[in-house]
Length: 381
Picture 1 (tube, rainbow, N blue to C red):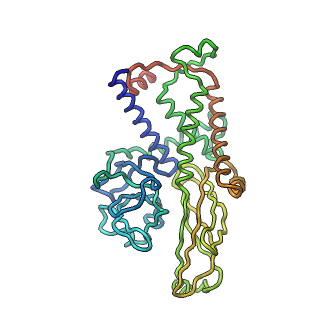
Picture 2: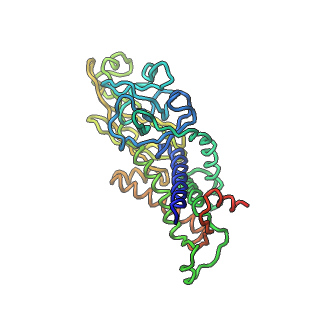
């Protein structure tokens, strides 16, 4: 293969990975490799609709002043993922601000941003954000299209047209199926495979396709589950408690912590109290696509002049199993619950492959050195 053909193939693969990461990140509500902004608050650094490379916080390391971060806002514009720059730091957390805004987020109702709220950093080279112009344009339409695809695809393979407990697996499989089909451009003819056909070029074993599809589903799904969890803290001030007519210092009291699902698939949340004296009243919650919920925690109300920190660890699982089953498995061990969710995703993927393609050898149209766009046009002619 020539250098030109190798470079062309590499660019095609990179383009497909970029599209897959952007679409799957939008579906799962967790930036995967790339993200984008929907408002002008970061202009002129990042214009409306522009994208950027999103480095997961676990890989980005510590936060420094001047970093552009993606964090889960609690109050700003009703809560949600926000991309702003860190302009300062206090004992309570980081001070953030949109480059185009005349005031900081903390000048409004948003409290200082803590490390557990940060999900990604925008990649910067020599202090300049690496911007991908117009990457986010049309993502809203893609999201609507993906939901329509899920409904139609689920109905096609006999799962019904609702985003129910099977919906997460079917939706993720449908996306993986489409992205995978873009790279393979599989011929529509279904021919019975024989032992002799296995040695013929231009044929693809559906078992190989199944493995790749499973990976296309499992990798982003697990990234969302593992990166989406974390520890939340609520600081209760004794002076504020003393002014409340409903709370008596020294007595047990209940507070609420907000949780959000920014993705397009339902999730099951399981909580564990971390700080001493903190009791979680809602050990599990089910949160639908794009919805929010509140977690109730109980602790002893602090005396005036004192503070109590309520710390709760959150675990996220795709809602492909009944919530009580997930909670029971999690109680045994979080990895057991994670393995069960993955087993369901693998099972759904395999079942859909068997219905749509079957475990047989399928013909793949040889594209030669033609570009991906050329091959797709040939398929549509």
